[in-house]
Length: 182
Image (cartoon, rainbow, N blue to C red; front, side, top):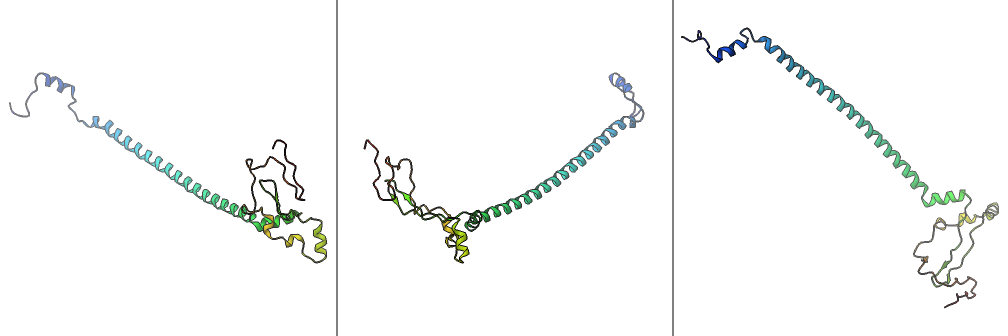
């Protein structure tokens, strides 16, 4: 028996009967369709993914622009607050509201004595008469620092521990009454 004319026997013959002896292109068609569908689905998925990433990128750039605009607006508002809280602006605003600078302050020492001589502030009724006479009003004479609270170096603060148990001495120089039990 020579090469191609060989006949299969036994188990190989039975298996050969199960295999189609014709062309094998019919078995390849479903496989090729499956591969084409997988590749097409992958390309469509990549296209959709790329589109959603681009949309996210546009939203991100829009949000960054809004953030920049809001930051600029916040800084402008902060400048306005700083300008309005400047001492000169507060003084001008206080004058517009009819406020007058206070007089010389007096401070109460921890031992109950009064330091300084209290003086009354300028009265609003005094302003029109001073202006009608061509003299500067007390408001115009007062320096801007008259509207500011006294500095910590010139005033003494009284805490609960430092508060004396007796009443403070009056400014007129009469002795203060002491509390009983001392």
